[in-house]
Length: 351
Image (cartoon, rainbow, N blue to C red; front, side, top):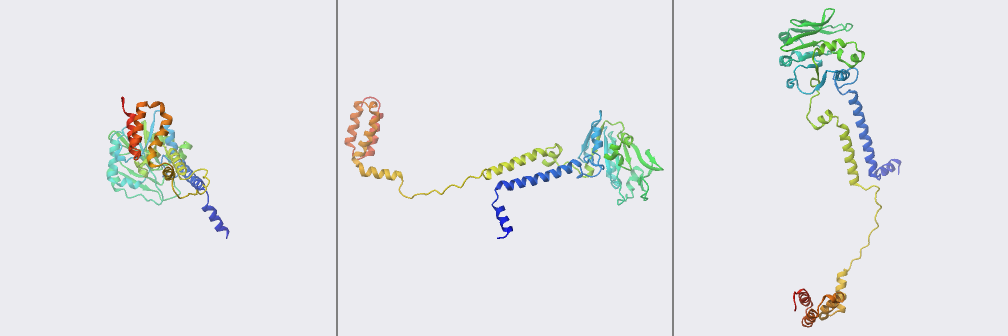
């Protein structure tokens, strides 16, 4: 027999708790790995307020949450379902192409019209060329432009913003423009770098962040445009209220319960085989003895004598004479005799 066959034989006869131990260790390692990824936020898109690495915006979210007088929250719902007023809504790392859609622009106008400050900060990559922007130019009179020279800074900027107030510009490039819509405003930023964790830690763009918030005392980081939407499922609620640890504990308890129900610990010793002898029962043996040693006519008298040996004081002379009469008349039928004896003993009054 080779070593492989020996190893397989040992594994086959391994105690059940070893398999559960290996499964628990593997599950713990898997959960630990996911916990580390969620803690760093690497599973979330860049500029998400849930991401903690340099390209995320979690540090800005946490900093504003600690600031007195400012209420910070995240939104996982579609923009058209928001009913807040007087809030600064951050749409970080927005794709410039989404602003060439008339319904989307109308929705932002509606949000601003209720008194909100809509802050849309763009995020452009070299492989994503901005679209022509016909709807953006027609409705808002804004046009994107792209500097193809990689050696320059501020590659994406606004070439035209008629009717908009210029908030920031560098070397003739419009980087931030603002316009009032109803009771609120819309702020367009060509970059999102000022909101990253790296920039927040360096504190080199705080003026831009303060200008983006404006006079609002409520800041909402929209996560829905990243694809992080409220699912409404049990897992979504657990993630929202941080109940992951409770579910892990329940899973461990369930595994221990199944283990306890499946096998005993320690395993019981094998019981020795029980030898069973087939034959007549004790009742049949007793009946055989009675038939051999007590005739049928004397069975009732024997039963009465045994009972009377312990209950003689409870029987009056009249009932005693009545029982003797029954035994004499019904000796051949012991079952009828015993029934009449019971009637004599239980009768009320004198016989």
